[in-house]
Amino acid sequence: MSSPQDRPRRLARRRTVPPAEPGLTRPPQPVPPSSWLLPDPADADEDGVVGIGADLGPGTLVDAYRRGIFPWPHPGVPLPWFSPDPRGILRFDALRVSRSLRQTLRRSGWTATVDRAFPAVVAACGEDRGPSGTWITGPMARAYRRLHELGWARSVEIWDGPDLVGGLYGVQVGGVFTGESMFHRRPDASKVALVELVSRFRTAGGRLIDVQLRTDHLATMGVEEVPRGRFLWLLETSRDHDVRMRTGRRPVSRLVEG
Image (cartoon, rainbow, N blue to C red):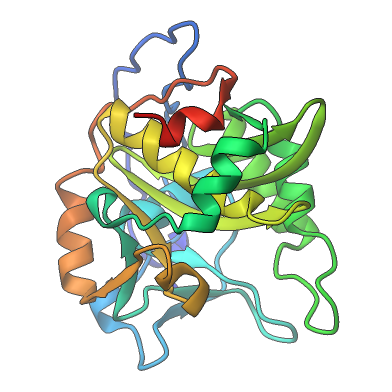
């Protein structure tokens, strides 16, 4: 990636920020322009690597996500940035909720919130996962907490009474939510978080959930793969929408009522 010394300095664009409203997620705040010239995602290699290096400043991260690029640390190498082809996405009308998951939603007694415990969700997602460890390093966790403070990163929390039992977090650019990680401390709790996200994001006017890479686990819930070019078009036509979810505590049983 090119540094600012390799190109003319850019001026920050002036942008009007919508006012915050009680009960809704905060609107994203302006961030400084990136100090790095991010490559075109179309130039990614066969593994989806767009570039190596750069930093995790808010300006860099926002610029990257608006272009369909995300960081994914790998041990022993400088920070890689990815834009995979194909891309894993979840369209709202493609969401599949299994019979057993419906039973969990009906009977668990859990509740859900948005943006009420972002640091705790990130910490839970970054807990040691065995020999492979975690890619959510200290610098990554701090960077996303800062994005959350600026209104660009969101969390969904699942609660069993006062206990946080599952959740997910990610970055929202307009009508596209890019999921970064999820966790569970009770069976199905991470799946419940995803169903909750789809419900709230769809109601708020969102367009789709970007999961970056489809896994067998996510495929069972309706995640599909689309060519990178298609995803980038969906992102470009949605990234400037004003989409703000409800944050209040709600029972997850409502997701299967009616």
